[in-house]
Amino acid sequence: MGQTNTGRVALVTGAGSGMGEAISHHFAREGHAVGVLDIDAAGATRVAEAIHREGGRAVALVADITDRAAIRQAAGQLREAFGPVAILVNNAAMESFCPFMEIDDDNWDQVMNVNLKGMYIVTQTVLPDMEAAGWGRIVNIAAYGAQLSQPSMSHYFASKGGVISFTRGLAAEVGSKGITVNSVSPGFIDTPMARRAIEGDKFPVDAAAIYSAYPIPRLGRPEEIAAAVAFLASEGASYVTAQLLGVNGGAVV
Image (cartoon, rainbow, N blue to C red; front, side):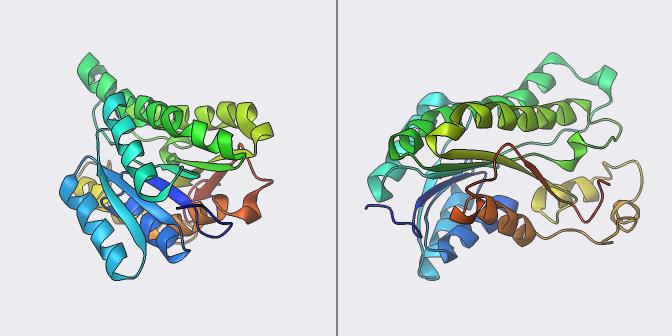
């Protein structure tokens, strides 16, 4: 299926729940065909089927983003279903809580592989589609933790700082080809991953004490991240690149 100015092909990683799910639904409502990619087959299928019920176009894709062969296969499935990829949202990520001196090599490598190497593999796989079309949008999901500080998350913060720097570096390389690369930095968003951390008492103080001190004193909603991503992926953001858009209730001031 060919692309139009309003209906393009989007690939969203980590799309089986949380922010990726909200982004996928938002894109589908805008008329985009969505590749709902997740390592969790049940989650990817659930989201794709929900989009179908709402009249949208989506295909469930199951892959580990750190597995280049699996990502190539998934991208091929998406192209076969809807056409070349024009929009990429690198959302898949993992959190990890561990005091610095207790981080072992396996834990460090796992965080870096998922949060950085996976982004690199997926982007490298679909970027040729955008270069061939002379149009593309890449949005990478960072985290406000890369701009603040909190105990026991130095490896996670390092990986998300890498997302921000990767965004800027790639933007400088592909801007002349009609491709923009930006990042969105979510604050404390009400997602399954955040809920697991809250319920597991992973934060140094009560979670409510953290977000109640923000200028907007509440948890963010996945739909608010989706709206920011959709703007950066739109035609209207054609002169916006290498930027970090914070959606955090004013937590980073």
